[in-house]
Amino acid sequence: MQNPKTLWIKQPLATLDPACAGGLVVAGDRIIELLVAGQSPATPVDEVFDARRHVMLPGLVNAHHHFYQTLTRAHPEALNKELFSWLVSLYPVWARLHPEMVEVSTQLALSELLLSGCTTASDHHYLFPAGLEDAIDIQLAQAEKLGVRVHLTRGSMSLGQEQGGLPPQSTVQSEETILADSERLIRRYHNSDDGAMARVALAPCSPFSVSSELMRASARLAEQYDVQLHTHLAETHDETEFCLKMFGMRPVDYLESVGWLSNRAWLAHGIHFDEQEIRRLGRAGVGIAHCPSSNMLLASGQCPTLDLEAAGCPIGIGVDGSASNDGSNMIMEVRQALLLQRLRYGARRITHQKVLDWATRGSAACLGREDIGELAVGKQADLALFTLDDIQFAGAGDPLAALVLCGARQADRVMVAGKWRVSNGLVEGLDLEALKARQRALAATLR
Image (cartoon, rainbow, N blue to C red; front, top):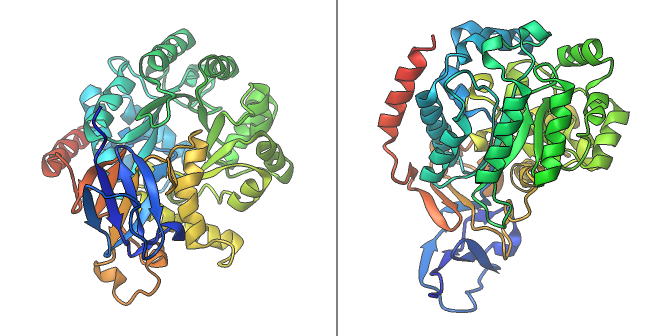
């Protein structure tokens, strides 16, 4: 078998890790050598990429998203509303999704993420109206075309308005259907190997849209197949009130009652916890996907990130649904995390290095992965390279800090599993103008 070609990404302008100030060497899909400043590779390399204009990061990892919501950004029915009323406005719109919409919105969301330096994306798709039963299959096909690493969660809703939930009946499925399809997707697509490009997790949508039995059954299925669990939790005070009324307990108590208080689970938002609940989540190693833009747009609150992290919770960053953000830009989300969390913890404790760490190692930990999120020997060659040529960087000092503080928007180069997927600011092999035109046409039918 022929040895894979080697590539030296040489002397980047700045990196998140000083251990690779001289760059790094990639062979196949892995990093095989880190170089300190002034050092050359130990063995000859096949190619050299001069990175002196680039800030080099591990590929950013998006820990929570809803790809389909790129079709309903700034939707007129949902403007200026908080979570529950926002959802009630949009559920009937989303009930009209069809397969082409899932295909196009997935391709567009993943392209937007790639261009922002994201190499691994988790999506939470929980809408399966009639005709959309193969939504996850469609998403996986689009991810494979673009070469993006994905964790696709088989979401679900089983409590419609007739059962006391929020979603309309046309958007919910029976629990038998949900569990059967969840098992099908795991068996067909989930890859637990190091370097896997696709993994599947189970993701009942939220306490106000699924039954307790479905939560328990999902936990059992996840245990059986050794996959992760994901849900929305503690996003708003309305949710807490719903849990108290529906189940007679607060969200974390409910989570424990259905067998989810473990390091197999990661939660989207995680805002409204008391001190005792934070300690319990930390002891269990439950991950938290912080979604700052969504939390601000919907006026949900501020995630207690440092308290959760100190207790033992991995902290990641997610862009959340494009309809509650309204974008899919990971590097901009890193800046939002810095700004929002400084309001809570101050400038000394929330640094640019801290939020970049959340968006890389932290998000990877939420997804249960140790092979991505770091610039280290043996890790996957997932890299994001940014230039500081745009006008907002003129006059900037520290290059790494400038990336966050000055508001980077787009990567120049992005590598996933050792392959360039973005070159010179363009997604390889993608007609972006045609994709945007399709997206606009489909979105217009939902208004």
